[in-house]
Amino acid sequence: MSGHEHEVDGDGVVRPHADSHLRIGCGEPIGRLAREELEAATLREGAARSHGAGDRARPEAPDAERTCFERDHDRIVHSTSFRRLAGKTQVVVYPTDHQRTRLTHAIEVAQVAGSIARGIGANVALTDAIALGHDCGHGPGGHASEEAFDVFLPEGFDHGPWGARVALAGLNLCAETLDGIARHSWSSPAPSTVEGEIVSWADRIAYCAHDLEDALRAGIVDPGDVPGRVVDVIGLPLREQLSALIRAVVDTTCRTGVVGMDARTAGALAVLRRFNYEQIYTRPESLAQSHTMIEVLQQLVSYYFHHPDDLPAEHCDRDDPMRSAVTYVAGMTDRFAFDCAEHLLGWEPARLPRGIGHGA
View (tube, one colour):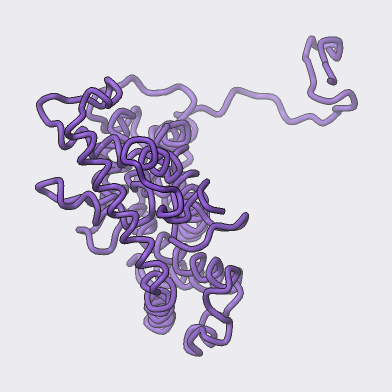
């Protein structure tokens, strides 16, 4: 174990390496006020600006170092809901060492969204916060959880609003961040910020391209099966697709002032999405696993509804036991949900679908 208690230079500074020698110019720390001034000078008209502590449900004093949206980003990254995405399936396919999870998907959406935001002069910190938090409302087992929980709630279950209002509610995030998370799905009302619309595009770009790559790697589809219109316009390798799709949004937005994509590239993306639905998401094996996942989750919700004493104290609301049960089960990882199905419901392991941490 290398230590550096003794590696102190003439200025009384401890360095990380015995041969550290690099220096940077001295000056005052670049704090929140300087960053807000930089935003005012560099962001384009229409981009979100940081304002002190941000518009939060519970007022807070501004942070000295970080803008309000940088603060949101950090809170999301350190949250339990975000960490649990590592144990939640992105798409129901056979899990391998390279299969994407909800966590890697969120990171990849943030990469795509950040590239677009930088290219068009939008607020990167807000974009990043929305992107990293956009799927924190998902339950275990991919989109099957939404169908599973729908029947228990009068308003239904939508992972976007659920993430903003339930899964991340304790973080006291800015209104702009919560709005972008709640409305990132294309079926939702439009977000109130340019940055929210960027994430809507980034999410679709990321899952279409990345789910195809996962399916190709797993042997679910063959490269020759991918429609020619997709290959001709945006290519087949992942890096070509992402480059073409990101550039299309940046170029179109800078040319028109609307966060959008030219019709030719958008048409190719739509064909790719339809292909993924037909060949990946709705293939018989995926549907069978989804149906099993729905059965597992609905039985778990029913169990905790009838056994509220088995819920952790922080999840037990005697005034609304059904919502308490849904909240607890929705927060589970794949593995934990399957463990509960075995121990509480008597499910045989062989009946359970393959997922993160199970059946690999």
